[in-house]
Each structure stands twice: as structure tokens, then as C-alpha cells.
Length: 172
Image 1 (tube, rainbow, N blue to C red):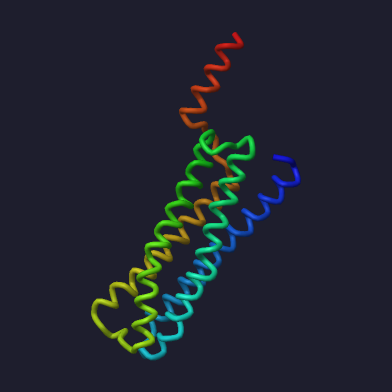
Image 2: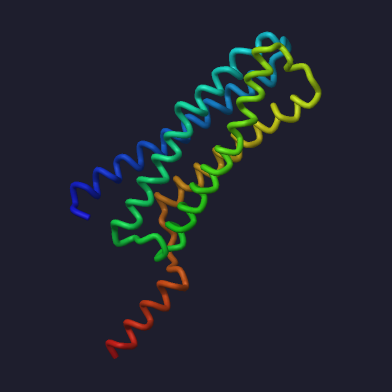
């Protein structure tokens, strides 16, 4: 990949990754405010806002992070399967995207229930708690991927280590 394109993709990846962390943090704050609200009527706005944040901000940012990270991995010397930290970041981002997509139905359901004034139902409490737990887990996962990006722990995957050993053997 030419240097300009590599740097452009890196900028896009960093922006989308860090922005997705911020979007999930906003989602978590809204979920906590709504869950802690004594007045169920007051919880209406946060749940409607959470639906918009999830669908219009978080989903596009997580997928932009996934796509730009994949381009970075495949288009640079880091590779997707060479280093454990790159592979771990990729798998964690895929996991984040999958869990987010699965949560959209619950987010929509809770937002609809809030609009209809049905938040007091017992089954909704567990769903509302689930939104908090999943958002907190998302933050932990996104922080972990950020830490991996900065520290880049040593260690080649077995596949790449064997590949390097085979090349070294050919040179000797």
C-alpha cells in the first residue's frame, strides 16, 4: 500500500475506533440514567436516544473500524495472521459488531416499550439491565483493542512463526 494511502487508512481507523468507544460510552451513560430514573416517564427520552445512537452512530463506526482495520492488516507488513495482537484486535472487533447487531432488536424493543409507557413490566427490567451490561462489556472490549494497538505485544502466531522458520531454514 502506498504511504499516503496507508496513513489515510490509519487515520480513518483511529478515528472510527476511538469514536466508537465514545459512542458506546454515551450509550452506557444513557442506559444508566434511564435505569436509575425513579420516574419511568423520565426514562423515555434516554431509551429513544439510545436507539438513535446505536443505529446511526455506533453501528456505522464499529463497521468502519472493522473495515479500516482489515484494510490496514491486509495492506501492511503487520498482516492479519502474523501477530497475535492484530488477530486479537480483529476478532474482538468482529465480536463487538456481532453483539451490537444482536442487541439492536432489544434496543428497539425497549425504546418502543418506553414510547408506549410499558417500561414497568417485569421482563423489561432484565432487558434494561442487559443494555447496561452489554454496553459496559463493549467499552471493556474497545479499551482492550485500543491498548493492544498502542502496546503491540510481541509474539508471532504459530502460522507466521513456522513460515519464518521455514524461510530461515532455506537460507541456511
